[in-house]
Image 1 (cartoon, rainbow, N blue to C red):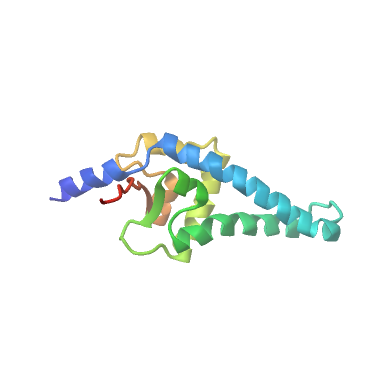
Image 2 (spheres, one colour):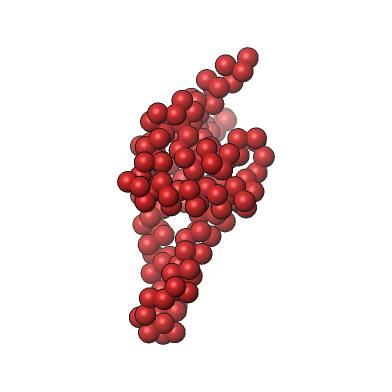
Length: 147
């Protein structure tokens, strides 16, 4: 029965293309958010890039992803591509899981996206940040309205 459960989970697992499409969509929205966040503090920073400013932007990026992950399991990009984040235990993701996921995802990007490419080799289609944070991305099937 455990083998059948693993097969069902791998069918619902999200592949690399869908992940990258959602990331692209979210990056457009995130860029707009960071632009507005920079406009808000630009008079204070006078264009200087300080460590505090960088941490400010990092915090905005974290909350851009973590808040919707915590609330519904989906950012806007994930919603558009019908992907949902969930804990491997079936419980809601904790803030600790989300922080680990975020940090490891940054490392995954910094080394040529290797952590994301891992999806192609992992039987459960989990990236490094999924594995490190005990989370997974699942495909959300379309719900047809009942007549």
